[in-house]
Length: 164
Image 1 (spheres, rainbow, N blue to C red):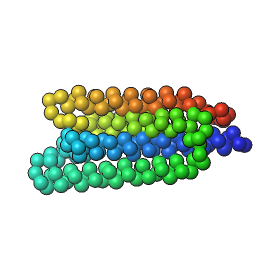
Image 2 (cartoon, one colour):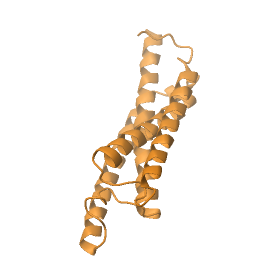
Image 3 (cartoon, rainbow, N blue to C red):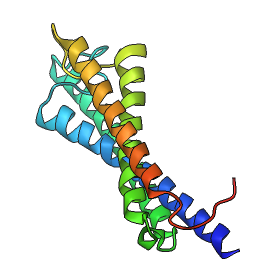
Image 4 (cartoon, rainbow, N blue to C red):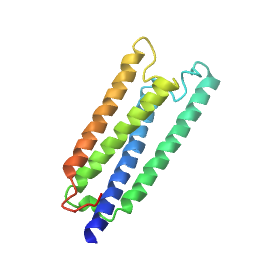
């Protein structure tokens, strides 16, 4: 009974970590690429920010993107709070960090494939080398995802028997 309860709490910790990784990874994308570097906005390919109304349109959708990343991050915080201290179990910190990296990497892969390639809403850095930047974004995402998965696997079950 105790082992299955701990395993459930460890899964909850992993879910929280992935949500936090998705949310925080989205914030890094929006803050660094949209605002600080100003390489693109969420919908800058169909609506180029070349006039004040178009820039306002793009800024609005960047804000909606931030609302979404904030909501996912808050959800991750609440799930983390409900994980009953699983972070303190053996391997818990590794599971938390690995899950966050996996969530961030998963975000980069999904966002990169859908927004950059399928829907062509924007590119990481539009211009003559945009494919290089888009592929680099996907490679970083894959690296984060694989590193996160490796950390979660290395965390193991924390000495708790799990049922599958």
